Image (cartoon, rainbow, N blue to C red; front, side):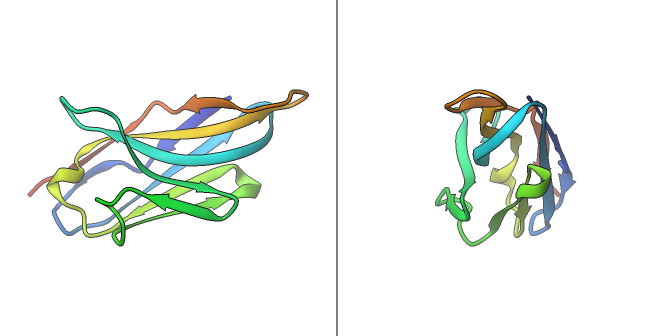
Length: 119
């Protein structure tokens, strides 16, 4: 299973970016998809997840970020608005996947995409 993330870049404070992450491989089903982030010198932290239409957000992004998914494409999106310098981090895509012909789920991580918020 591969998770291909895209959409990062440099944006000014107050600006917007949209991240995408597509999962591919021998996928029977996806339980949860989401985004984590890791800033320099800091621990990895949850940003947002989506499972069966339910969403969960970190307090720091609630109201500014929106996570959505396209089940047919095994893709998750993160719309980030009103970006702040403290949102600067590598954003990592995450998925809990059941492989074809197996039971149970396995965690997978994408390679990360850098988001820099700076004037």
